[in-house]
Length: 178
Ligand SMILES: CC(C)(COP(=O)(O)OP(=O)(O)OC[C@H]1O[C@@H](n2cnc3c(N)ncnc32)[C@H](O)[C@@H]1OP(=O)(O)O)[C@@H](O)C(=O)NCCC(=O)NCCS
Image 1 (tube, helix red, strand yellow):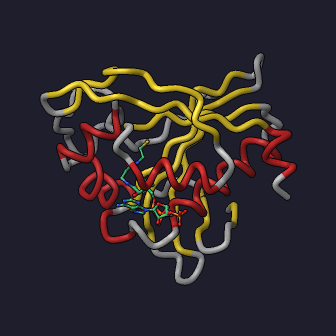
Image 2 (cartoon, rainbow, N blue to C red; image 1 turned 90 degrees about the horizontal axis):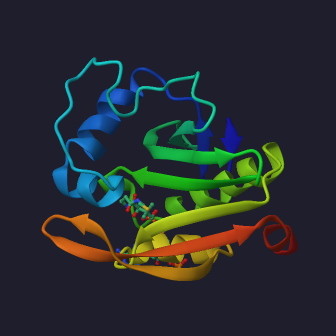
Image 3 (cartoon, helix red, strand yellow; image 1 turned 180 degrees about the vertical axis):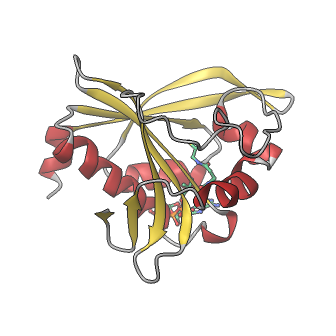
C-alpha cells in the first residue's frame, strides 16, 4: 500500500473489478472520455476485460484507490507506458462518480508521482487529458505538472474532435517542491 494524505494505492483485488467496471467502464460517456478508443460493452468474467490485471505486463502498474480512513474503494490509478530506457511513464486515474471533487484526485496524482520518482526512479511523468477536463488539469497542476502543449482535435469523443493537453513533470522539479 502506498499512502497519500487521504487515499491509499494498493493492488487490484478481485472484488474491486465489478464495482470499477459498473461505475467507470459501463458508463459510455465516462468510458469514451477516459479511454481514447471506442467504448464497447464488456462481458463480466472475461480475463481480457478492462481492469483485470496482467502481472506479466511490465509496462503498466495498475492500482486500486481506497480511502485511508475505512478502506473504501474510490477508484483506479495506473502508471503506464513505462519506458525504462528514457525513464519516463504516463499516469492515469479515474474516481467513482460519487468520490469526485473532494480532493482525492490531487492526492492520487501525488502518490503516483511518489511511486514513479522514488520507487521506480523515473525521470519524467506525463499526463494527457482532454482540454475540457478542468478537474484533471487542476489536479495535475496542483502537483507541479506543466502544460507542454495542445494536441489539436486529437481525440474523437462522442461525435466530435476534442483537443488534448499534454502535461509533464520532471523528477528534479518534483523534488524541488519538497
Ligand atoms: C479527473 C479526476 C481524477 C479529478 O479528481 P477529483 O478528486 O475530482 O479532483 P480534486 O477534488 O482533487 O480537484 C482537483 C482540482 O480540480 C478542481 N475541480 C474539481 N472538480 C472540478 C470541476 N468539475 N470543474 C472544475 N474544476 C474542478 C478542484 O477545485 C481542484 O482545484 P485546486 O487544486 O485549484 O483546488 C476525477 O474528477 C475523475 O475521476 N474524473 C473522471 C475520470 C477522468 O476524467 N480521469 C482523467 C482522465 S485523463
